[in-house]
Image 1: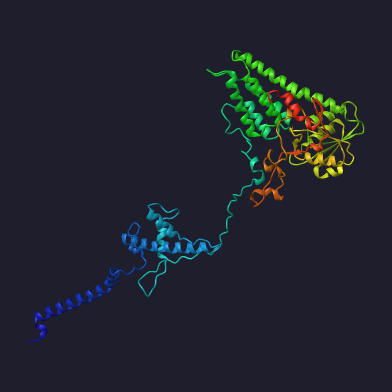
Image 2 (image 1 turned 60 degrees about the horizontal axis):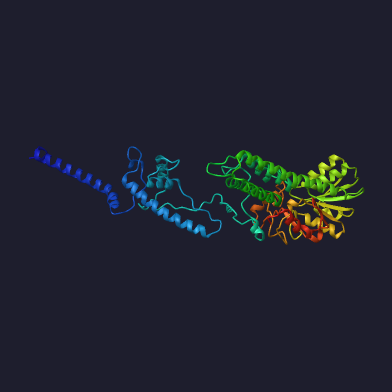
Length: 504
């Protein structure tokens, strides 16, 4: 029988054909499953393609785990490069890719700034992959080569105080009322700011203003319950004076006046009514100003005016209120003389004196301290003001006074100091180092001129500025002290001080 006529043979051929198709499909599936088996053995998978992502565009759990390993390796490499960069001068930190910032934020559970998941995926798809191996190398980081980072200068913490005068530096001057005590009177607040800004300048002006402010404090004072005026008012005045001292150190005359006021306040009879006690204290303050300053100045002016003769050339330094009155009174009495004003930085007080005398019609010459040797050639007398007269006969006055007195003494020109007894003190000094007032050093800088070397003195290393307010003139350079007690010699100062201060 022919084979085509056998139906069983047709079925066998169909089975054989089906078996061969199944074997071919099996071999094809085995070839496609080989990379997956290699991945199971621990080899690194290729770069994830968009088909490996979930439908919402996020990485799978396996991909996140692999990404975490890469970040750890990259972080170690980055830390190693940063350590090496710190050892080299001028070396900047290594660059950090945006993908690392995003992955670090994912690890910490926070959102990466200005980055989204799609941007991270695009960066991952652009990473090059090797065609010869199925493993992916860690991302290589290199130092930034764009613009080298400039070294930022560290702020200078250098001490700008002059060591030799370190004992004179205290708290910085108060320039605002911020932080003032609650009980400070408004008149005292305003006075402190005026003193700090040199609106009120000069020993007599500061003393009078302080006493008048204390008078206003007394007038508005109300004695608290279970207290008395002698005890509580003294404490209240102390708080006012403490504020003034924080704005600017008290002058010698002001200190003497405050001590007198405390003595008078403590001597008030507790049985006196509050209104009567306050009226008596205010009257005592007015009498003190009249006797110790107003009448004393009038006596000094009359005595010094007689010492000016026609044709004299009077030299003075800076600006003294008592000297200004002497020159003005002498001019009004018909004396014909010239005035030479020597001045210095930083306050230039002599300019105000020169302007005031020039407006009167006086012949005025103005110069600075560096020109004193030329200006003093034709001078006949020197009149100087005083901040204080010490018990050893030395003059404590505006810095530069000692240079003027020394130059005049060298030229055999008499030096006359005009000083009220309220400025006498029992203190003794041999130099200007132990006791002085240090003004803010920024006053030495010329306002509006930033081209000078001093304009940036705080940023300049090993540079300190010292702005002393006063200096000390030896008694040998002083010929006469004109006071309300007559013409005195420097050695007479301690005796007069004991005479006007019974409790000393």
